[in-house]
Image (cartoon, rainbow, N blue to C red; front, side):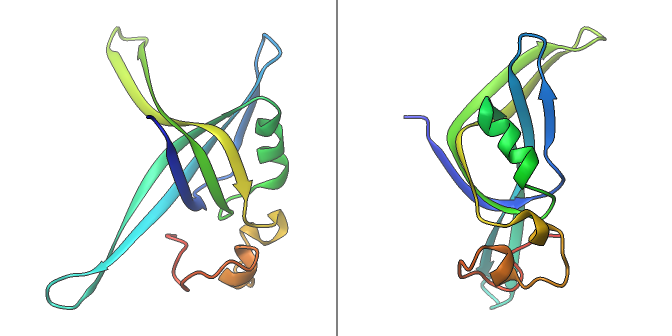
Length: 133
């Protein structure tokens, strides 16, 4: 089974494109943070960035309702994309092909430093330092 569920924050505004065949696509950059205490009791964290691709009508909704800093829940599958660049080099990209994106933040609060994390997450309980930037 190839299934991924992520909850994280957007590192930049969504990138939306209308395709020549009439399709819609939106690219999201989502950061997830893992936190732990090391053997010495020091708090540690690691941020992982995920490329998320959203197709169809939900792509338009992402650009209309999300902004940098927004908290999202993404469900989808891991996808490997291969291509040859302009210099003839083979390239590989690993991305999440979203089947659904749940908006956990209102757009007007997404990038606002004055909004608390609780407000940004739509009331979901979060730690004060959930946003990795």
